[in-house]
Image 1 (cartoon, chains in turn brown, cyan):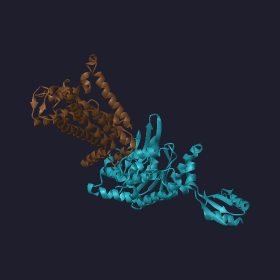
Image 2 (cartoon, rainbow over the protein chains, first blue to last red; image 1 turned 60 degrees about the vertical axis):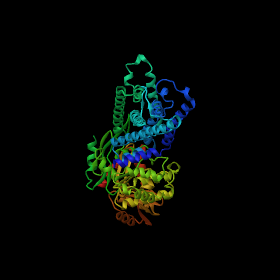
Image 3 (cartoon, rainbow over the protein chains, first blue to last red; image 1 turned 90 degrees about the vertical axis):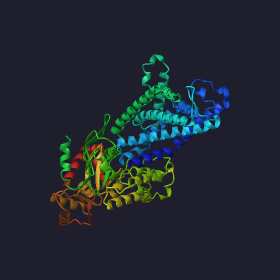
Image 4 (tube, rainbow over the protein chains, first blue to last red; image 1 turned 180 degrees about the vertical axis):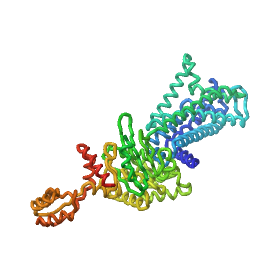
Length: 267
Length: 334
C-alpha cells in the first residue's frame, strides 16, 4: 500500500508541467557553465576556489554546477515541490480527497516528504550526470583535479561527485522540509515559495555581517560553502559534518512542525 | 447541556445507524458554524440534508468525514468513533465534498487513478478496472482522456462522483451533487442515488434544492443556523407537518356551521374548506358534513409539501414556532 502511494506521488510530481520545465532549466545550468568556460578559454580560469581548477577539468563541472545552484536554484525547486505538495493540493481540493480515502495525516506527510526527497535526488543526479557529460565534452577530462592540488583518478572523481550529490540533495530536502511546514499552513503555493526564498536570501544576507557571527552557526545557508570540501584531498570531514548536522536539524524541525500543523488542520 | 437534549432524540433509535453525531459544535474563531447537532443517519437510508446557505450543512459533513475537528461533541461513523476509528471506517465511505477537487493538468482518468492509488480497499490489480467502471457509471467515457482543466462544471461534478464510487461503499456522502448539472445530469444523479439505495448503501445528500430531496430521499434532516431543527423519515415529517383534510363543497356556510357544532375546527379555503384533523378523523368529518346537508364533491388529505415544511422550519421570524414544530414532529416519530 505504502509503495503504491509513494509511486503515485512521484509519478504525479513527474507529470506536472512545471516539474518538467524546472528539470529542463536545471539541466541547462551545467551545459551553460561548460560552454561558458569553454568559450572563455585559458584566461577564463584563475578565479578563486573551484573556478580556478575547472579549466580543462570536465569532472569539476558537476560539482561547480551544484555548488552554484545550491544557493538559490535548488532551494527554489524544493520549495515549489513542497508548495505543490500540501498547499497546492489544498488549493485544488485534492487534499480532502486524500484525507477521506483515507490517508492518515502522518502518512500523508511521509508520502510528501518521500516525494520531495526522491525528486530532489533525481534532479540533483540529473544535473550531475549532464554536468559530467557536458564538462567532459567541452572541457575534456583527465581525472579530477582537487583543490588541494592533487589529481584523482576518474573513478575516484565519480565517487566524489556521487558523495556531493548526496550531500547537496540532503541540504535541498532540508530546505524543502521547512517549506513543507509552511505549506501545511496555507492554501496558497506562492506564499510557500515566497516565504522559502525570502528566508534563504535573508539568511545569506545575514551571513555577510560579521557582527552577527553568533547567529551564523544556526543559518542553514552558512553550511552550503563547506560542502565543497569534497574537492579536497584527503577530505576534511569537519565542515561537511557540521553542514549535514545543521541541515538535519532543519529537516527534523521542519517535519515536526509540518506534522503538528497537519494533524490538527481543518480541511 | 447537550446530554439533556440529545438523550431523548437518540433513545428511540434501536435500528442500526450508519453515522451519528452528538452535541456537535464547531467554532471558527468567534463564529459558531455549527452547534448542538445531533444527527442520525439510519443504515440504508437516503438522508437529505436541507438548509439555507450557511446553515452548517457542509461543516457538519466535513466533521462527519473527519476533515474538520469538532470543537465539542462526538461523532460515530459506521460504528466507530472519529477521528480514532477513521482508518477503519473511512475506506467504506465515498465522498464528494465542497465540489470536486482534481488536478487540472491530468486527464479525468489519470485523476481517478491517482485517487484509486490511495484507496485502501482497492487491490492494485483492480485499479484499472475500477477506474473504468466508475467512469462508465457516471457517463464520462467520452471525456475521460481529456484534461480536467477543460472540463465543464457538469463533467467535473461527474468525475467527483466517480471518485466517490471507485469502491463499493457502505456510506456515500454527496455535498450538493447536482450543482452545475443540466436536468439530464440531475436525473442521472438521482438514478445513481437510487442504485446505491437499492444496493443497500447509505447515502447522505446535502442540497438546497427541495424537489431534489423530495424525489430521492427517504429521510430528511433540516438544518437552520447551525443546528438540526427537524429530522426523521420524509413521509412522517410531511404527515406530522400538517394533518388536515381539504374538502371541496359549494355549501361552505352549511358545512362550517355543521363542523362548528361538532367542535371540529375548519376554515374556508378556495372552493371549499380546510378541516383540521386534530382529535377527529376523515370519515367523521365527512359524516358530519353529510348530516349537515353540505354536498361534498371531493375530500383529499392535505399534503404538506417539503417546501412548506422547510419554510416553516427555517423562516427567521418564525424561529420559535419552528422549534415547537420540531417537538411535535419528534413526538410523532415515537
